[in-house]
Length: 79
Image 1 (spheres, rainbow, N blue to C red):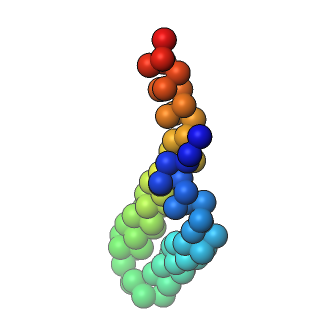
Image 2 (image 1 turned 60 degrees about the vertical axis):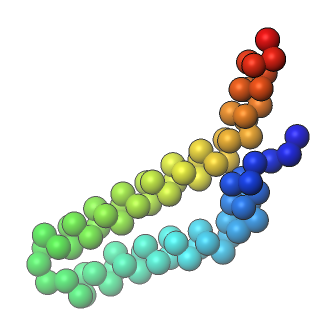
C-alpha cells in the first residue's frame, strides 16, 4: 500500500518544520511578555498561539491516521 501524499510529506519534513513551528511559538509567547504592555493583549496573544498549536497537533494526528482511514474505507467498500 502506498502512503498518501500528506503523510509522506509530513514524515519527510517533520523534524525540521515541527522544531521551527514550536520553537517559534515558544519565542512568540516569551517575546510578547516584553513587547506588549497591556495584559489583555498578552492574554490574547497567548490564546492565539495556544489555538494554533492545538490545530497543528490535530492536523498532524489526522495526517498520521490517514493511511488507516483509507484502508478502512477500502475494506468497507469491498463488502
